[in-house]
Length: 184
Image (cartoon, rainbow, N blue to C red; front, side, top):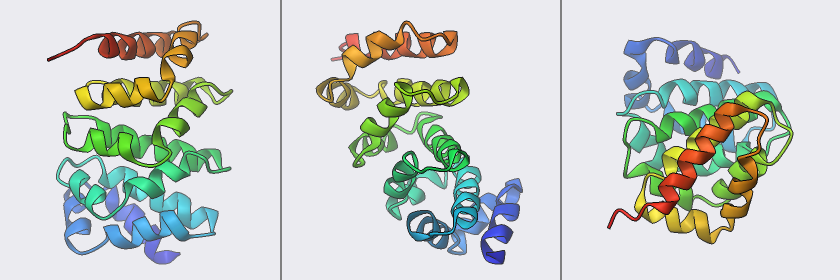
C-alpha cells in the first residue's frame, strides 16, 4: 500500500511523470488496477495512472502495457470514486490528438457499452459530461464512427439530447455531428 501511495504522490510532480514510467512504475499500477481486491489500493493506483496519463509521452506506453482494459473495467466498479478516476484516465487518453490511441480505446472490450451505460444512468452530471466528452473525442476518428453506429448508439445519443445537463447536450450534439460527417 505504501508503494502505491508513494507512486501516487510522485505522479503529481510534473518532472516525475515520465521518470516513473521509465523506471517501470506503470506495470505495477496497471496490475493493481486490474487485480487488487483492495478498494483503496485500486483507487490510488487509478489516480496515479490518471496523473501519468496527462503526459502524451506516457499514453502509448499505457496502451502497450495493456492498461486500457483494466481502466475500462473500472467504469463498472461499485466505488464511484474509482469510476470517476477511470473516466479521468480515459479523458486524458483521448485528448491532444492521439489518433493512434482512440481506435484502441473503442476496440477495448466493454468500452463503448460502459460509456453508454453511464450516460444513460443516474450518475452525477459531471461524470456524464466527462463520458460524453470522451465519446465526442473518440468520434473524431473515421474508423470509430462505424463502431459507434454499429453498437446501436444512435438512438441512445439522440435521447441524450434531452439531458437536463446542457454540457451533455452539447457534447452529444458534437458526437452526432461527427458521426454524420464523412471525411472521405
